[in-house]
Image (cartoon, rainbow, N blue to C red; front, side, top):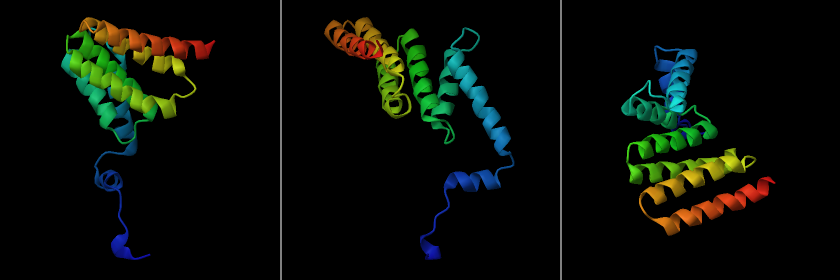
Length: 143
């Protein structure tokens, strides 16, 4: 192997050079996951969105956690009237779900219903019905 072609992942370099241990980094990620997943009135919209973004950007988050973080970020955005941003977050959630959650079509159906709610709020009723039909098809697979 030619040493000039060998590349060390940036994450590995940062982990080695970081004054924080892997346990510290994991603890910080877990705090962000809790804040993002809580969606309570105890945190502000900005704090919840920031926590979700930290989970999404983390290189050690599972695909499932990233999918959930995108979904929850979409809910927060929808609750605050940011329909276009919510739609984007929900669609990104779907991109992470199929591989990780293929055994859980209910999670995909839940995101499809959230997309339908965004379309309904935007008075795009035909698009909402399409997503509802997609969710119903997945629901039939569960039975």
